[in-house]
Image 1 (cartoon, helix red, strand yellow):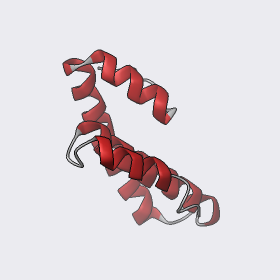
Image 2: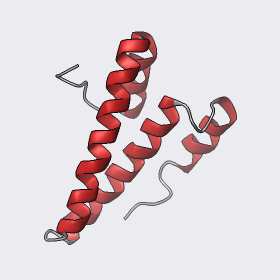
Image 3: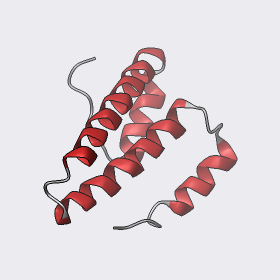
Image 4: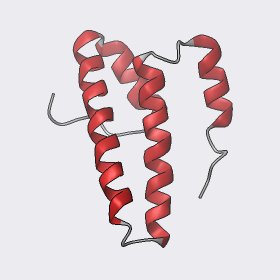
Length: 90
């Protein structure tokens, strides 16, 4: 698993943003999702972690839909920065 891949971005983000902001929460959820997907390459039958992954995906989807409704420009910037797909259902 890759643990230290996003540390420079996190430290940069902490200086600029509030840890409770939507962007920071989505960033942390994205890190957890990427770590869990790399975990599933080795442990395919870890169903409890799969359930946790689905919960995190749902939370991230809710936050992204909230951000897209409130501020579309920040939403587009965040999607491009994190290199994730745009949500189909808003």
